[in-house]
Amino acid sequence: MIEVGEYLVKEGLYYTKEHEWIEVLEDGTVLEGISDYAQKELGDLAYVELPEVGASFKQGDVLCELESVKAVSEVYAGVSGEVVEVNEELEDAPEKINEDPYGTWIAKIKPENLEEELKELMDAEAYAKYLESL
Image (cartoon, rainbow, N blue to C red):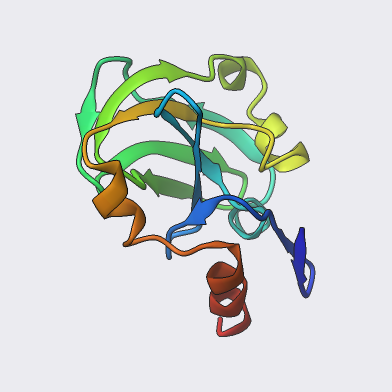
């Protein structure tokens, strides 16, 4: 983990400027969640509106919404593709994201153009530098 002030950045993941993370799995699918920075900025999560399994998104599209005591925030698709699974545990326990943002994924996506789109994302070191600039 890289520490940036009070925030943690997990190495080995890819990050968006909107504070989503992407983990590429061995089978070529990806998991997506939100960073430690994002969950701390949102505060205690009260509700996660999960995307539909089978829905397709383009990189940058709104994937789902998170509701906290502070605000409603959109989560954007880090890669283009089809949602093949969602983390249904979050329907009853959205606070899991606050407790372990890097161990709690929101959606599993079968990417369309992974190699090209990963070039648009930041690695952990670049994301840590980005956080320092905020």
